[in-house]
Amino acid sequence: MPGSLARSGPLPTPATATFTIVPIIHLEATHPVVASDRYSGAGHPMREVTRTIAFEGTWDADRSSLVRGIFDGLAAEWTATRGAPERALPLLDALDRGGVAGGTVIELGSGTGLVSDHLMERFDRVVAVDLSFEMLRHGVTDAPQVNADAAHLPLLTGVADALVLMNMFLFPAETARCLAPRGALVWVNSRAEDTPIHLTADEVLESLTAAGTGEWSGVASRAGEGSWCVLRRC
Ligand SMILES: C[S@@+](CC[C@H](N)C(=O)[O-])C[C@H]1O[C@@H](n2cnc3c(N)ncnc32)[C@H](O)[C@@H]1O
Image (cartoon, rainbow, N blue to C red; front, side, top):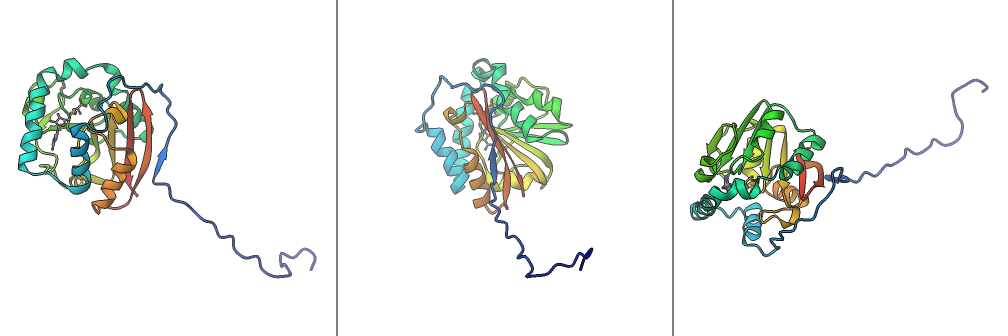
């Protein structure tokens, strides 16, 4: 039938597309990557503590008190020994390429607040939380500081548009509770796998998923000496 759209013969079978879901896209570094010259080693005691908190939920009053004591003892020298400006590079790269800005950000394990003022430039509200009162007392930031345990945060459910954890333990259920449904979890290790408190991006995702907090996806990369990932619920 000339001019007709009708076609003769068997109908084509619909194409069956197969999708592979890639929860974390590893982006090429856009800033130079630098090897850390201070290797803490995979056997660092904090490494094992980090893993057991993330995967077994092992945190109680004794461990909280022990960790607080360790960081209270490091507080006086923290800024002098860790205050190099380039240490903030992985965090800034994560915020830029992870598309995280504006609203309310809670920084967990802020220490003396070495990166908190960067957060104040990019968010409307910043709260810096740390277990160690001595870290907060030696604070070098204008951000409001709260002395609290990230395992039991004095925060409303879903209050944070972003949570920043730089060299900090991951308490998956409590972290997810405080994050808004489309909020961003920003995980940074300032010396990548040489950081004592370290998880890979895939381990962060695995910990969140295993804690029953839903499905997550995001991006990860490296910058300077550090590594980062930004995850959101799917
Ligand atoms: C390795 S330091 C990192 C400090 C800061 N983020 C930085 O990179 O300079 C870890 C910080 O997490 C804090 N911290 C450890 N456990 C915590 C918890 N359960 N709740 C809140 N802060 C905690 C420590 O007191 C310490 O200040």
